[in-house]
Image (cartoon, rainbow, N blue to C red; front, top):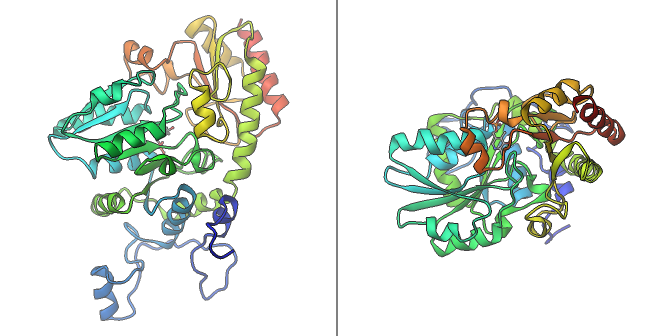
Length: 393
Ligand SMILES: *Cc1c(COP(=O)(O)O)cnc(C)c1O
């Protein structure tokens, strides 16, 4: 297939570290902290960045390198680095690019720890921020100042499923000559490619859909070469590296991302449709339901609606506790993006550190439960949610 960019499924399977002398078919695991030099000249050239090759696993190892090279192809990024978790990727993407006095504009609907970085950690080093509400389209232009260094968004957001217009934000960032960074965890490159829509960097928690089986933590930053070079310098010297083992797991997982996401999305869409209008619910939120406030936008920038469905139960927090305790199949866990369906109650767990007002501002009402729709038989998932709704009424 010369002259054609590799298709998603093929790139995800056939991007592989060079074969070793053992002629392996599936890539081996390089559990080694460092690498030996052929001679003094090679060592000098490697450290001078004149040639490429593994040196020390804090910053280069065939397994993380393979994983991130593949992710670059799938996201359409020029370059990338792998990190030990999603938060390591989020933090490195920000910390590598800002200095004291800089300002960040971000969407208000963000992962809990990203919110902590912006509101508590970066201000220690003199970096300020402004949040823009998902529904406040004009707010972005107003929020940008001369010292604004970057825009940061998450879409669809965790757990509120707000959808932000990446093409518009990408154009806005370009007009101010600053990068747009997108946390693409919920969509994965299979459903949404932010770089093609104008993002400069994509960050991932690979722990979720990319692993897809609830085994390892991991993350990545991919995109514009000059920005990734800054992130690589930061990561090389501060050490948020991805372990070779986790990288090996994640690279194998990317091979099946497309087929898994097809089924996750089909199950989630069917579950959302099934429960919309249910007597026990105030609301069902899913990007591909016509009732979602950014439904048209979601259809435009995503190929499918993703694997997360949000239910807002009538009866608030007490009802949610009874609902969760009545589940027989779905797991109660803070993770998402697993073969196993997982139910989470953000108000009492993942978002309990936010104030009530902060939760309200991003739509996390007490009755909200997040369902990461798994790969069990759809009828069994629906039946479990149905019986738990009845039992908790
Ligand atoms: C889970 C998550 C993260 C953090 O990832 P870890 O791998 O747990 O560090 C960041 N962003 C989003 C949207 C997430 O869901």
